[in-house]
Amino acid sequence: MTHPRRRPALLRREAVVATVPVAVAALLTAAGPATAAGSVGAPGVGDPYFPLAGNGGYHVSHYGLTLGYEPSSRHLTGKAVLTARATQRLTRFDLDFKGLKITGLTVDHVKAGYKRDGQELAVTPARPLRKGQTFRVTVAYNGTPGPVTDPDGSLDGWIPTDDGAFVAGEPQGAMTWFPANNHPLDKSSYDFTITVPEDRTAVANGVLLGQRTKNGRTTFRWRQTEPMAAYLATATVGKFQVRQYTTRDGLKVYDAVDPREASAATPVLERLPSVLEWESRLFGPYPFRAAGSIVDRAPNVGYALETQTRPVYDRAPDLSTLVHESAHQWFGDSVSLTSWKDIWLNEGFATYAEWLYAEQHGGDSAQQTFDGLYATPADDGLWEFPPGDPGSGANIFGTPVYARGAMTLHVLRTAVGDRAFFRILRAWATAHRHGNGTTAQFERLAERESGHDLGALFQTWLYGQGKPGEPSPS
Ligand code: ARG
Ligand code: ZN
Image (cartoon, rainbow, N blue to C red):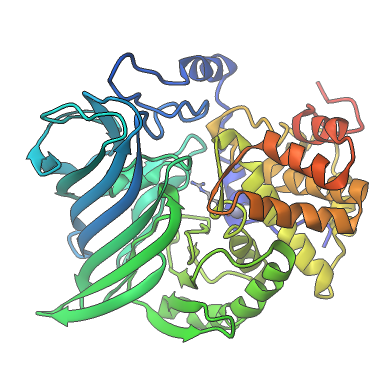
C-alpha cells in the first residue's frame, strides 16, 4: 500500500474541516490558561485548544455513574457521584456538564448552590472546602442527551442510534452524559450501573461485575479500576451479540457486536488476543485487566474511538483499525495527553503501530509506507500543518497528525536504530503508565534512551511548516 489506511471518517472529515481563522485561534490561545482568582476554582485546566475543558482546584479520584436509558424515547436518567480532592481552598468550583436538566446537587450530602453557563456548571458548596479536603459531589439529572459538534464538524458524546446510543467522548463529549472534570489531565476510576430494556445491552469500560433482569429491564454493572480520562468512558447501548472469554494472559474480554455487523466483524475481533500479545511484545505489558470491542452501527459517526479497555467502532472494523485502537490502549489511554495540542502522541503512535503490524505480517515495510507518503506533493493536505503544532482544535484529527505523526516516529527509528527505537517506545509506555505525558518529555526520553541529539529531527518533523526537506508552498 502506498497510502496508510486511515479511519474512513478521516477521509470524509477532510471535506468538512474548516481551519479556524487565525484571529480566532489567537484569541483562543490568549484566553487560556483559564484562571480565576482567590478560592474560586478555574473554569478550565488551561488547555490552549479547549480553554474550558476540565476545571481547576480539584482532582476527581472516582466517578460512580448510575444511568437509565430508554432508547424509544431517548430519555436518560442519571446520578453521578464524584469523589474528589481539593487542591486549593474552594468557595466555588466548576464541573463540565452540557444540556441535561439537573434535579439535585449536593456536596458531602448537603444541598449546594449551582449556576450553569454553557458547559460550565459552577457549584457553590454550603461551606468552603479546605485545601486537601476530600469531598463528594452528587448530581441527579435527566433529559434527552445529544452529541456536541466539535471544531472540525464531527460529532461526539451521546450519539443516538436506531437501537440505542453510540457513546464516545473525544475530545469533548463526556460532558453530554455526565458531569465531569473533562480533560485528560484528570484521570479517575469509574463504576457504572446502567439500566436498559431487557432486549438491549449496555456496555461500558473495564470488567462486567454482573447483570440482572427485573421487570423487563436489565441492569449492567461495570468497573474500570485503572485510571481513565473522561473522554475514554463509554456507556454504549444497543441490540448486541455478546461474547465473553478470558485470554491466555488472563485478560477478561467482552465483545458486543451489532448483529448487522457480525459477519464482517467476527473474523477481525477474533484476532484481538493475538494483536494484544503482539503489541505487548513491542510496547510492554497491556496496561489493563479487561479488553474487548464494541461494534455498533452508527452511520452518522464516521470514526472509531479507543474507549478504555474496549474500543467502540461505528461499523465492523478492518484489522488495521483494530490494531490502531488497540495501540491506543498504551498510547493515549494508559499514557494520556497533558494538552490536546500534543495529540500526535496518540494518533501518530497508533498509526505507526499499523505500519509496524503490516511490516511484521507480510505487508509493506514501514519504510515503504513512509516512502509512499513522502512522495505526496508539497501542496497536499498532508503537509498543511505540522503534527506537533496543529494550531487549533479543528485540526487535531487531521491527516498530518496521523500520517506525519507516524512519519516522525519512522524518521526517529531510522536515526537511532531499531534497538533504541523499540526501547524508547517501551520506556515511554512504562515511565508514564496510567499517567500523562508531553511532547517535550517524549523528546527528552528519546534522547536519553538513544544517546542522540534529536533536537533538529523533532524540530523539522514535528514543528516545521510544509513538507520537510522542501520549501513550503505559498
Ligand atoms: N481517536 C480516534 C481514532 O483513533 C478518533 C476520534 C475522532 N473524534 C472526533 N470527534 N472526530 O482515530
Ligand atoms: Zn487514533
